[in-house]
Length: 87
Image (cartoon, rainbow, N blue to C red; front, side, top):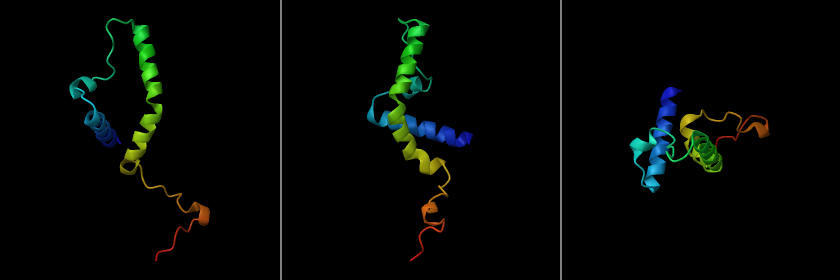
């Protein structure tokens, strides 16, 4: 499980950096605080960024699901669990 987490975090960083100019070394240290702000202000900013990332993060996670999660065995459950017959 740990390997999967690490692989997918690396892939997420690659996705971000593929469309934007980011220093991966800086990104790898986590949330970048604004030194001109208080800890409380930075915490509020972090929570706002997390909220803003909810929907896009969900979309990105769905792209990685086939590589991380086992196949959904509930497919075909609506037809009595037999699934589609082979041709």
